Amino acid sequence: MYKLLSIQHKMTLTLHGVFFSFMLISLLLQVLGQTDNCPTEHHYFALGKCYLLVDNFLTWADAKAERESSNSFLAEFEDDKEAYLFISTFASNFWIGMYDYKREKSWVWISDNETVNMAYWNDRPQYLYNEPCGVILYSQGLRIRNYVCDSQQYYICMSLRKYLHS
Image (cartoon, rainbow, N blue to C red; front, side, top):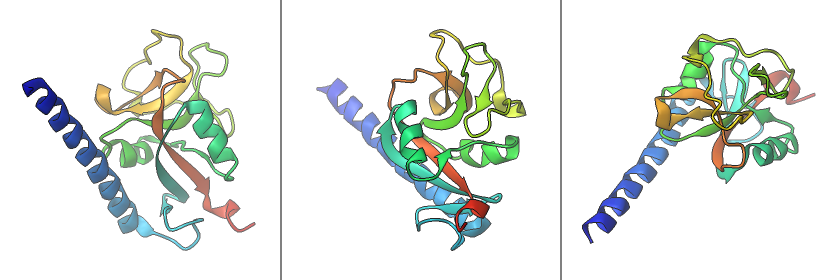
């Protein structure tokens, strides 16, 4: 009975943490400037891009396909400041638009195949399962890592403001 209550308590705390994280990032991005140039009221404008935190569990490939059908893509970060905006407020894992296409431990962004080379990488990704999909992994100390592509995670998407009204 105690273990069941403990598990329920941990699940409740986790759900509260996820909700709090969504609220915190939402407020943070609003402070940075919500704009009418973003597609919906769920998008927030920061650093020249419109972001959306999607609280729907999908595999990396399904999240990528769902975003592409909506004329946006999984989030990509140009530098550690942009990544930190998200990493510092999460209490969950989120897919991002980073992958190792040829599985050569050479990470690129999905929109343009530009090499990922950022300070927030912390250490080399773990290649325990040779997985090519990028995730912000809260459970390992807020690191960007490769992860099991068929697992289901929340995801962050983005669109560039200049493409929204063309």
